[in-house]
Amino acid sequence: MSDSSQKKIITRAQAQSTSTATAYHITSLRIPFFEVDMGQAVYHGNYYHFFELGREDFLRKTGFHYREFLNRQLHLTIIESRCKYRKALCYDDQIEIHTGISSLSRRNLSFSQLIYRPAETSANHETKSSELELCTQIQLNMICLRFTGQTTHLPADFRLAVEAMRKRE
Image 1 (cartoon, rainbow, N blue to C red):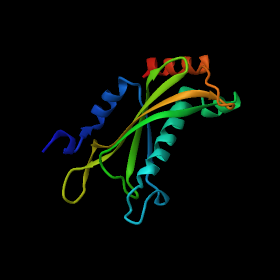
Image 2: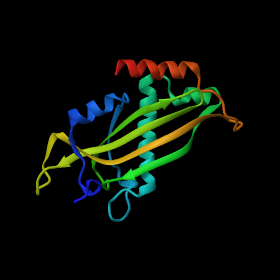
Image 3: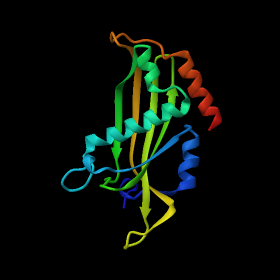
């Protein structure tokens, strides 16, 4: 069996220690029915809804809400997305979205996001609360734009808020 076909199961402590290199914030939620198809699995495009929820929660945690970008007539636009779907998410799955900023420059930033769920550890689907299974991961490169479409610098206070959070985590 190749490495890519093996399940990626880690303990919650390992997920958190892996996360600290990028200062991840964890958002927990349960997959709602409206996000799944007739087979009760999440449609691949709908994963971006979860990533968006994780990013918004991350920004709240920094103290610089996305609303502040909008108030300044700015927004963050995705210029590149690389998503790896490892394991399907299904209706009612409890998931954790780990969100962090892996790089930050004057105009651009990159979000690294991982979606985990408790790992199934036996045939009757019992789980150990400390084991997580990596289901999806994404790298998003974003740029700051004015409402006019012109690129601009990320707000200095946003960059300071991100740096302060990185130091706290």
